[in-house]
Image (cartoon, rainbow, N blue to C red; front, side, top):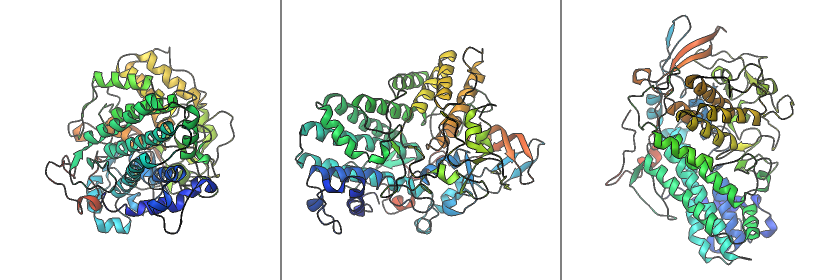
Length: 559
């Protein structure tokens, strides 16, 4: 499927792309019948294709089942499986795929839910279920390979285009854009699926599946190619900035989004490479045990060398004040809406009526007095659920107006800033965790404090308080849970900390808040999720494009 189903991607891009740039600058040919010869034969036409390959093919096309973008459904699965939000709607299995196999309440009562994530995922990973809208494995694969395919096309065309100004700089800026986003796409595939495909030529075919580790290595390869161009291939800063300002939609050049300098972009690359390593290996912290192990898993534990590599990359990663890649809704011609484009907006509002419900396990990670709580959440209503996502909490639309405090949700057009790749907070917390794991407790806690200050938490510092290694790690866990929410990372943290695995394999989640259907709040609940750690390849790919000789498994062999 990756070799034929995206033929329409070019058409979608060319039809929609003029809306992301200034139309008077585009030589669009006939917009009702776009062709490469008629529409992508100038610098502006190529920039439009490169922009649409990311923001339309990557983040919009095909994501209209629940919400209307990559950040509402694929990111939604990551927050559902990360035990951050729950859902009642049946769309795309959102109400069932994150339900644990069992939970044990404070009084010892054990409830078997009758739901198995692995069985549910496999029963619905069929082409028929994709057509009906009930195959979760389909969407992330669809978007990332659509993005990748269009960027391959841009790369195949760029050397034949005449550029204004410093043509080499302008050409290399577009190539760096393609390499960065190809690295991002492979990162998204390799971090979620057990195997993937290397497709680096427009319209090419392959049936040789590569195991996830090779896909992550491929991501790093393209990120390094982007970095090399940014270091050595940009001789005119003005031509570079002119092109990048056209590649990034103007409504995304707000807040922490903007036209990155080459140094900023290099730091964004380092942060994503650090993430690639961190989220794809195990660092168990089960029941506050730093020595926990997981016996049945599709990955391997972090080593001291790995932690030092994360430390090196994150030290050269995103700094406070750097621009990063973000998305926002727009009044017209955007790539997601203010009402349905993100997990955040689908969780914002009264919890009895929102698509996603903010979970008790998310809220338990704030310290008393955290201004992010008073500025963003209320307990005016309860949503009671008989499985696992009862909650007292709702997100206040736009926050309560406390200056300098992070806002978790807004339905105003352009009001919510969706982080697409890395952020200052993520980078700082990778520095925190690497330091903690390497025994540098105070250094690690300083980064936790820095993130809390950055988001306006207003809580007491934890540095210099004599915290043990375990309690310091708990502070890191709490802060990652609340400061990186809705950024597509929550499940990866659950997985690498061991919480998503079967208790029988050493996993499980302990000490949880849990609101029962009767409205009773339990505060020491044990939950056995037993989720599949890396997903099977979608049937839409594997059935139509079976693996050839030398292929990795398309179904995770550990489940």
